[in-house]
Amino acid sequence: MKRKLFEISDDIVAAKTDLFASDEEIEERLKILMNELVHKEDGVWMLYDKLQDDINLADNYIEKIKKQKIIRQNSQKQIKSIVIDSYRATDELPKCSEFNPLKILQSAAVDVIDEKKIPEEYWKEKTVVVLDKRKMLEHLKTGRKIPGADLKHSDHVRGLK
Image (cartoon, rainbow, N blue to C red; front, side, top):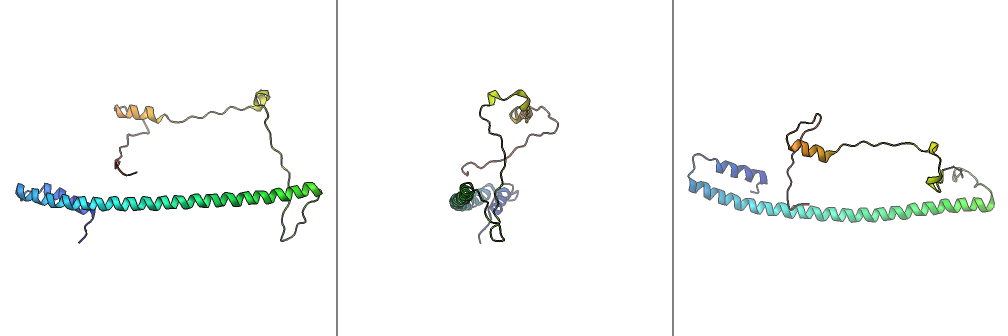
């Protein structure tokens, strides 16, 4: 019967705290459980590694799809450019119909050539305030209380990305 990692871990804890077994029995039971745990951990690593391969494959597919998307977006831009160039060359708008809803609209945007020459009235101030989490962490580690924040501890598994 294949057992789960946490079941083996529970049995190790139970064996270590068994009040009715002798030291030799506990040692023998722990040796068996540790051996089982090592094999299970090897399986966990292999599963993790296999999942990483799947993630890498998905990343490759995503990259290919992004490239194809860019190619299609560039094609759309070229088509728009052709329509605009045709309008400029003929000075006629494309004929609109149910099958051709294209219209050419003109828009205006500011083209800043030299920011240094722009008068002060066209500038606006922008202030950004962000938390200094490094400073907060240092203070929380020393035991200092900060309203609205707590020190959060988390476990990390070394050896897994």
